Length: 365
Image 1 (tube, rainbow, N blue to C red):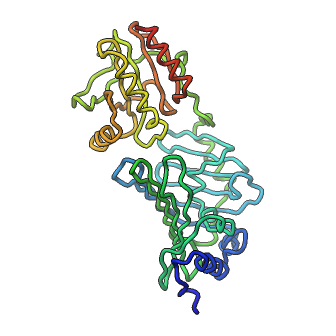
Image 2 (image 1 turned 30 degrees about the horizontal axis):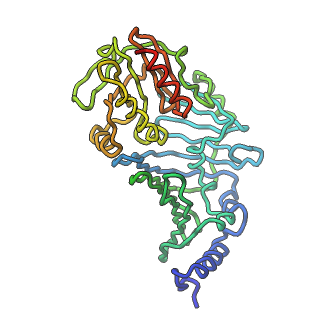
């Protein structure tokens, strides 16, 4: 029987088929097909990244050019590389990742793996022998390609998690990789399309690093520090009040206790905090306490309105452009008392923090 006529709804035969497929495609080696690509040590290609976030209907598109050089001494990625587009530039050299914002003319350095960057490195995305431990199945095949799905276990409230690998049968390359996950009835989708893959490239990484150092330097924040009541001061800022379809300033609420919840739609911890913020709204009178959900990131008003309805948000939502308090972690809660003093600021809402927040509000009334 030809191997491609194996009945796919029989689990054992599917597994046997995949093992044969791996052997025929060259995936039995620990490094997959990577060795063939690196015959000339360097590899260059283009990446088209499509991304649809949770609770959003539109898709973002990003394009990158990648130049890759194998470096077994590099413990972060295993490669020297240059990744760039019109907005950003990344150089990895000597176990150090340089990140450059062309707009701000500054660069940072890091000795920590950035998973978003790693996803753009084609050889790290191949199916390898160890992947046989996951749930794999062939979902389509024709004369030109075969598509293999890797299913992952559900995690907390995330489900229907899988990766699709599109493999060109002629050259055995995974030219496209997609990922999918569901959360609260909404899906998130990524598509990496690798194009113009070619061996060999003239690049001098040392020279590239010297060019980078012509930019201004900014220290890298490995873990952005959450705000504290001592690190920020009360600042007025304007925003769009979604429920009333108008712009207003924070100062219009001065004289009351003001609770600011900084959040955005695709933030899982922010979503988990919604019931507690609702409780604050309902436990205190509107004459004494104002509760505002401050969104600095999302822009589509209709999507946000749908989100508010889906998650039963019972407090006001303010869409702001100015990150007056330099918020970098979400959710962040800031409480301002009647005297315009910050009496609480913290990121994340644990059981202990919830008790602190309630205590601070009661003390301010």
